[in-house]
Length: 361
Image (cartoon, rainbow, N blue to C red; front, side, top):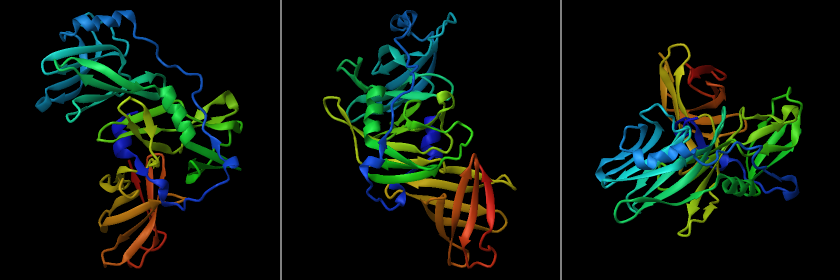
């Protein structure tokens, strides 16, 4: 998975615009933690050679190059003799000084951001591997006066999962799963998996999808819960929401999760018209109010540029202004990579109520 995908392709919905009703706490169950983990152990001994051999004969990927601040971050993928780094090794360049961190696993999607105000780096590294698995660890790296980098702290993924389990919960009635932040209802979804032997008694698990957004001044943690089924004790992520919480770290390195909890659904992004192959549907999230900006282009007919949407029970409910200057609205649903725009409210003679258009990501 790619963090940019989640930042640019998935939409964040703060409390979903639903009525936030209080619930009987006895009905809300906490999420469960990791399954049998495959967390990586320490770096292989031969990777420690990075400390003495990062004169850049190594194969590397540039994660950050801030020329104005003279900061560079690189992940080592291998050595000139063909030896693999086995997924370990971060090298940092600052003011002409090189520092190596062979113990950091850079994983599938390492990211780095330099904070000039604090003269420090935020870095994400992988700590769990496997098909379809993405679990990250957050690292905070600071610099001595001579430019030498040192590891100032990080968030252990087990501790983060424990905090998330305390922050979020769920209830199940028949096949309807409802998610909560504390006693606030966030969203509901229907379990449509009927061939998995039924849901486990403790159905919702955290463990295989945990990642961070370090792109801005605020830090955010994301996780996708898995729906656990009896058959093989497998986890299904199909149509599951992604949850988000803002992370605050104090001067002692202790982290807390704010109450600004949100839900992410896989709607945000750009879609092409199925018939013409033109990019005619664009959905973007507005973090300030939890709504979406929606642009709908209907080839050879019209463009709706001012659409505003919020999450409803069945999908994104939008309103816009038609070519005659009157309100028009509808529902956007998503199945896989196909979005369907259905107009449910219209007075414009060229679009009838119930008219649908299909777009593909």
